[in-house]
Length: 241
Image (cartoon, rainbow, N blue to C red; front, top):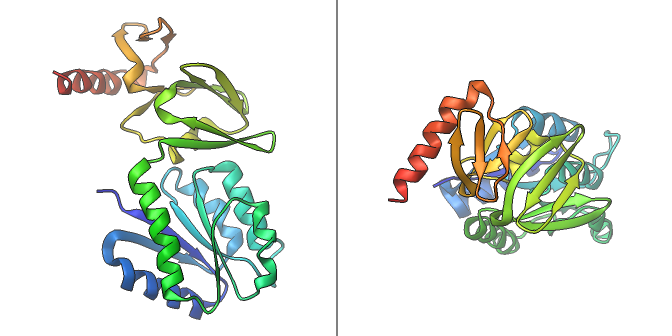
């Protein structure tokens, strides 16, 4: 079973230790925990670990020596990685209204009460466990667009944008194709080309030129990926017999 990854960001080492100890006491080895005291490193962390940086971010709000506060940084992360769930932590209640500039999943006031931490975390862990991100939330022109992952047929890279083709429509979003790793499970969505990701269940057959979907759409497969995709398709067909 995949472990939920939790990243804690706070500039106070003592707070980091207290939260890590609390989470470890409550959840044991059910979750993986990373910590950092430097908020500016978070964007680089996600770029270095595409699709595996963290599922949940516990984010302090106030950083006296940083150019941006925790809300601004969290909002930037969520614009790039919409499935990221953020719990804000702060010693100042006055920030409660400001957190909605991002998309908060929780708000905890220091010193953190263990029962409140458990309530917020339990809700998020249940969402992650039950849905496996079946609903994809993407930002478009400042709005959040929700798409059922089961309805996605394929995704195409188009310059600085991606185009998500579903059963009913196509939507364009400003993000990189590689960012899709953060919200689509690799075993169901295959990267077949530098410009394409395809839903395995929508693949009808493979030819010498690429893949053909059930609706007749043909997609290219990169030469370097051909053997791997052919094996995946064969294994998928065998498992359905």
